[in-house]
Length: 251
Ligand code: NAP
Image 1: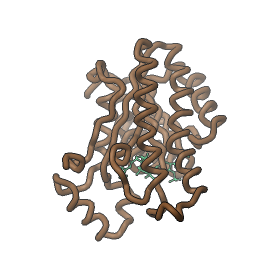
Image 2: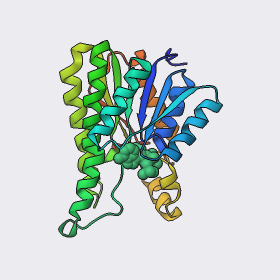
Image 3: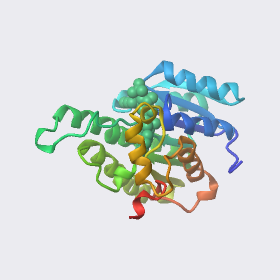
Image 4: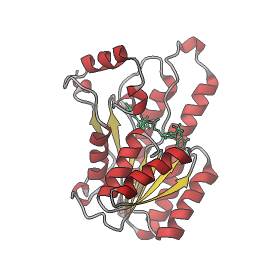
């Protein structure tokens, strides 16, 4: 056990699938009460069942992170049920459906991705910190990406949103540093989630070849970094982004 999270409250947005599901399961394994939040009730309830079957506590609250009222109600619900919010992982995110040629880039795609990935993180942090400030403690981890540090060709909104998440993380961490709340980010490279598992093998092989360690990341490897950042072991860490990319960004 990396930290005593028993009885603490942990929120993970977009935890019906992929990386978010692994993060929610990891919080459950550490004894936290896990709020599994997602737009998909069916997928989120599967995550809740997985956590409960292994002896943890998990609860579903529906929330579209791009909708202010949803986010506000999510945090009000957590306060009513648990009183505090100790850890929050703002994970919900969507990718460009396909790379675009800039002169032909679609404005609706831009608006949707920025709204979920960037406004979503802003709204979540706004309401999470309102509750955390009352208790004068808490840790927030935002899920950025390697595309928050480097260009991802043809994926304008995604790359801009993930760069923006690092800016939001640093600014919020700086402004709130004296209040007992730490705010960090993680920047994963290619992680073998259901989405990537469904992609053509040729694409995965190309990604593996670009990765110095020779394989794709595992969702659990992102989860362990998130849990460490939330734990007291990372008590002096705030305003930073941890790169989890198998060495891709070294060259
Ligand atoms: P995923 O498997 O698609 O999971 C994302 C979850 O978020 C899904 O359950 C999705 O529901 C939900 N979601 C989508 N829009 C939402 C909204 N507006 N409000 C609340 N929930 C919403 O994705 P993933 O690959 O695990 O990615 C998770 C995070 O890691 C994202 O922020 C992503 O950008 C980041 N990331 C992923 C990788 C990677 O290689 N996989 C690498 C770097 C960063 P639906 O399925 O119903 O849409």
